[in-house]
Image 1 (cartoon, rainbow, N blue to C red):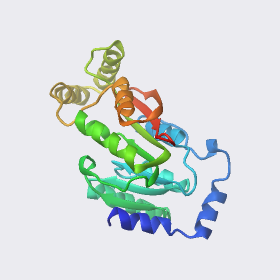
Image 2 (cartoon, rainbow, N blue to C red; image 1 turned 45 degrees about the vertical axis):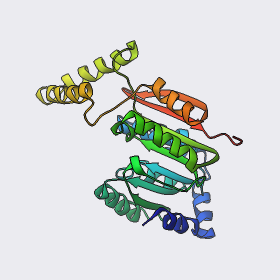
Image 3 (cartoon, rainbow, N blue to C red; image 1 turned 90 degrees about the vertical axis):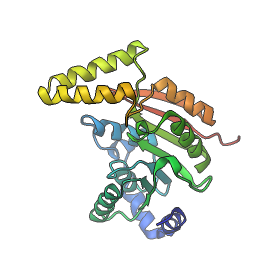
Length: 246
């Protein structure tokens, strides 16, 4: 399904369905966000908390994977376009949405680096642990594209692996922490240290950048009110808003 069809389908959600969603999520926002546990679940919780999504909001989830973020956003009443280049992951997401009776999700199969969407069509763009796969130039292009996809006042949230090349004390602390954590796992952990270390040094597959680099990327794209925070271990979250008047 292309984006135009997905947008049309989501826009035609019935008023009764929307009323039920609003009533279901009327309690305080604290009750809407699931409690944090470890690892990626803490990242997901941080994204949902920052998103402050409202019933009826149109959200684009970039690199949605199996739907950790998309499903919960839809459960909060958002209309979600879930984008990923992995069809198997999208199939899992669709199966989960059907199992949870969520009608507000449409999937779009596309690589992120060549994604094209209508301008001023979304209230929120989110991405969780997908951007470190992209080269730095592609990160900048995608953030600039997200700026154009958002309506004035819309928000972009990037949660990802965020550390640089070891130049700062914070980078070195994150790298040491990851090595210690993996080393405690024994032989398997040391194998992962070797494999991930090689990928990191030669930038194969993983291309993380620091939180400060991310805030600069947001600023160059035109976002304002940019905030940045560390979530857990190497994970960070950067958020910015498209100005209402440019």
